[in-house]
Length: 255
Image (cartoon, rainbow, N blue to C red; front, side, top):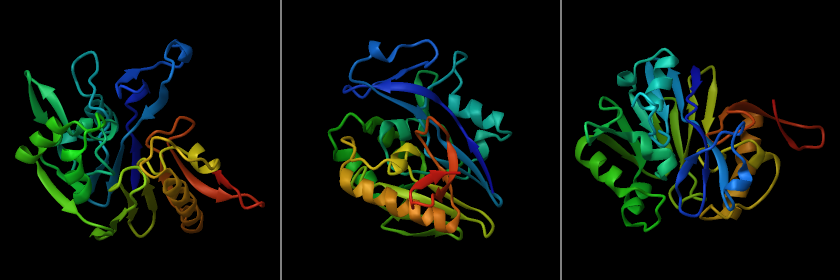
């Protein structure tokens, strides 16, 4: 199994839920009071004969007008048109914006030949949720034009590719576990978005159920250490991927 990090950039996001590009080398965090600073990085996985995309980023474009996500997939040596499945953890804009892109003053599917795989409860709540984290115009277009497969609860989607309904970050958030018989890859979405959230216990205000999210990180960390999962950190700043280990004192470490 091959994993490629598709780094879309660093951003600040304040209460208005707008993602503003942030360059740690030149921009001053003090100029953006009240902002959360994050990286956004979907992942491309070559799984046997399949090409998988794990979440889709913001869908922003480079100076030439090309989607950063498409540019990064090409840099990894693949054609965006060859993506077989887009596996979604949840539908907040920073994870779902890249499902579509603007083209010729209209909207187009970013992966027209792919099947978008979404937890049914997340899809249904996205249409009724009043939060600006959800962009219903994207889902409306997807519903009319895309191949969508809805999954429910926790199950094996296809052999070797499983989803677990976690809730916690959103009521219907899910994580993905890939197992090709040799390697195991875990994508925790926003339940385990960066390694620091595993290394230090805390309850995040931006989670639907912060305490449950904290408990799930602990659970997934133990499973990752025991089963040698390669963990993918969607918002990780210090690193995008890593294996979990335990110190002699039983504390988590990234190895």
